[in-house]
Image 1 (tube, rainbow, N blue to C red):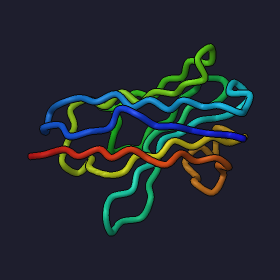
Image 2 (cartoon, helix red, strand yellow; image 1 turned 90 degrees about the vertical axis):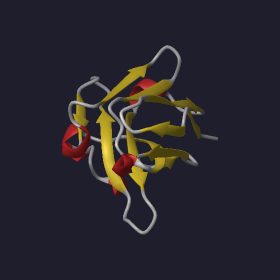
Image 3 (tube, rainbow, N blue to C red; image 1 turned 180 degrees about the horizontal axis):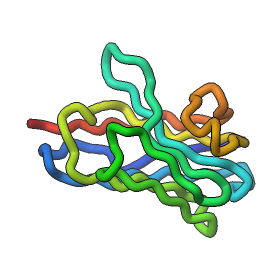
Image 4 (cartoon, rainbow, N blue to C red; image 1 turned 180 degrees about the vertical axis):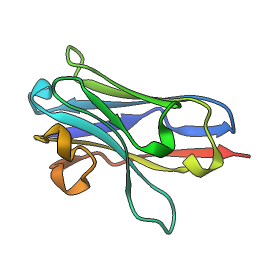
Length: 124
């Protein structure tokens, strides 16, 4: 049974930092692309960042220069380092895994497995 468990969310002031982690089990982690998506109240889910099996990365324009995605295949974990946080970054952040080509990293429908989400709240 595949499980993705996110951690590291919380409340932070604007300009602060948080580091999200997603621990995966029940799958051969290195075989999967990983990604972070987020969903704010009343808005559609949106792509934040993705990392391919090759460790090539892709980030949404809204987070470029502020967020960094990385993976640790030895620990079956993917991280999202979030710096210079803004109130508009407030959302539930979800981890996702799938056999996804780099060209499709942004597509939520390409991912098979999803975590339960972790809340990130940025106060102004």
